[in-house]
Image 1 (cartoon, rainbow, N blue to C red):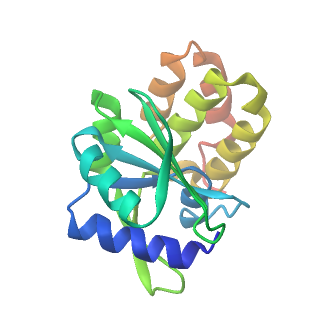
Image 2: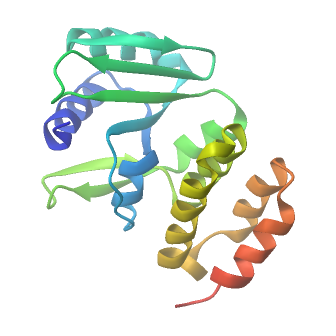
Image 3: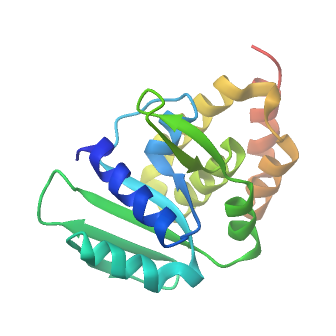
Length: 183
């Protein structure tokens, strides 16, 4: 995937169509100072914008591969355009994540991309590892790298709320003890 080209095209269209989004997943980790190899782009997008999103993606040559209440996945026949996954924001927690997203410079400042807060990326990682236990080790590694970089600046109460949702309160307390101070 040519991330700069694809992101440039997507963000231009997102702005033009006023699509409410935030980068999440592996690309967001890089934006937040924790680079990791990734093969696709992941976004949180407001559910009310899904029709506009679908129209613009198909106009760019993407085909929808999956669509549920919670997610949409798109692929492109040209590998340079890769695949793009969307988590649908419609619950209180995900709508709050969208509202908190901030713009960060990417590609040497040529562009900026709205990205979920580190705490919210952590919350989505916790959900991913609970939903797919086979991903647990990768998700934990991503979470710990984010916590290493952002440490004491994190909103630990918000992080603990995410862990509590999935019955992992003790795990959150241990992480706070390890990472909740300045490095």
